[in-house]
Image (cartoon, rainbow, N blue to C red; front, top):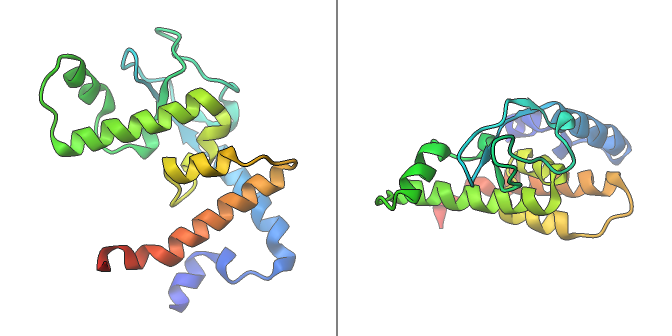
Length: 164
């Protein structure tokens, strides 16, 4: 149990270090390298740091804003997309990958770069990201506090998911 707490210092950190933790988390998320996949034409963007993304990224090939975060999707999305467009039968895992890609692309289309940050957070998927993004906030700190809460909730509950 102690090993788990050492891996995630936010779980045992005192309230006084909360601002430092949020700042560190923000810097780490903005420094992560991401690659986006266009769900219209299947092309991928060059890998770049999150903070360097435009506010509302677009595909350089077709101009579409329907871009999925390649980092968070299992499988080769461009290849799965080609199969789907050719009306070939998709395996169950491919269907899940394409569905997850579509959910992340919808968020990026709606919220732009702001959607990429929660999707990069450990334990935050499209559904949780959507609920975090939908909240009206007056400060950036509140956004990162919500991300930290979601990350900690994932860490605390994940070991029990397979037992049900």
